[in-house]
Length: 263
Image (cartoon, rainbow, N blue to C red; front, side, top):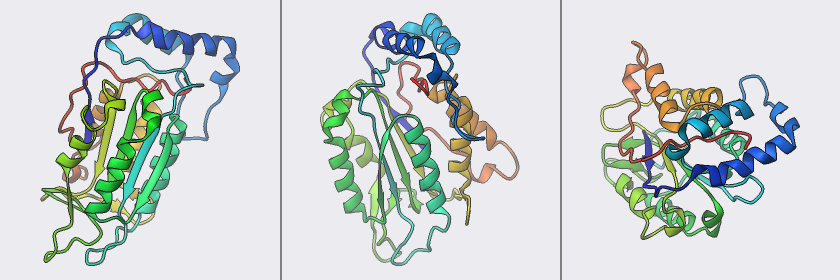
């Protein structure tokens, strides 16, 4: 349910991270900022410098906070013509939107779409000019699902309304989305797939999104994105969690993607 797509040319990490580090050194008060209890932990200057020194050739560079234009897209289908309502999905949207905004992304939220509408929104998102001055992107899909893909709002046993997972990757490839070439693209899918059940609390939201937000808030300050997803998967290794064990289907990151929250 969590997909990452990327190929990156070797660039020198120091060229993009050192300006951010210098900016934080000039204004150390920014590092003292922290969110509410349970909120996003910021990356300290000490941790950022350690990662920079130890893994500079292995880490994707980030752009300066003052000039980058990070974008994220959330597509959530809650109401369906024939399928059951996804009660609690609004909590997932609120939680993911707040988290991504805390990580420096401007978040677009689209709800209750057909497969055709989802495809159109994907293409529009891929064409956004802001990606040229962004260093990464997140896309989050939340809906009912089947083995073939993500259900649109009109899906039923009689009518197929499904967004093929391959369409997502094709829309974001280098040919169709050149502005995101060589940049981390994190694709998160919260939907049952085949026989795998997607557990969801009517007020708190889905177990997967709850765990994902929790682990990102706690560990993005010091862990790369693949480490964080491993922590999410590990949290499901219990008798009550195995039914929804998340998977990373297309992990092609060639470097470590650190979010450096606060930078």
